[in-house]
Image (cartoon, rainbow, N blue to C red; front, top):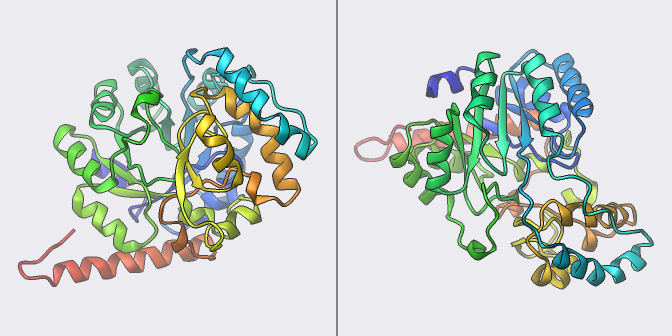
Length: 360
């Protein structure tokens, strides 16, 4: 299983799929061409939009790549809490001179249509976020020749991924930027996330699947640490968000190392689901009151976030970032992969030089 994954790309470096326009085909192609694994994010796109990006990526590289899908969300949000939050955001709507979005714009993110495209036009790897697909879905992708991965944030979720028949599990630590990929959004567990290294060790003893480690990784030495802990590869998001090919807004890239933004936290302010981002005015003012209602709150705040970006106001944007954001490097993606590979090799050599050896 582990070799089936690593045979797809020479370096144990995966570019995280970042929805919202960050993981563009140019970024994924550059990473795959450099020996890592580039990823497209299908989240928030139409099935045709996803297909068009896949075609662009195939035109830019012959190397393997992945596509990430969001799982459909159950209907459990209280409409009254969404309405209360909408009323709270009335001032933001007036300030940015834009209407709030329709919270009932859809919960399934076009899941079935996207699956149909990926079964008709198979890609090397498909990963899933916000839940675990059925065995039938995973088996159908396997029959199409696609390697499957599912995000897990706990041992129990990793065990569910194994039972469903996925080929690998993406173990996401609480340090990760963007949305936590919990299978069920339970407000009672807010703030109880597990750090990456502890989670890798626990999952390694509980499941037999290859592990892709995700969460706060910005340097090759950290990749070496994840591999030593039992991972097969490491997935980096924030590190690639800052690269030249990334589709992230320039204000977002600059904010990663701007001393004005001193910390990150998990917030429901922009989407109704816990997501780690830089703490700005919007997070401070609305985070404490945002309900557990995804994707309703995501749809509600969509126009506000776009208006803030258009106005050049980083204080109203969703500045997703992992805990290692201060280590972001302004580099072309291919060069970043090369630097990470060099750092990884140096870390492996340093471990091997320790008394008794320490090969990763």
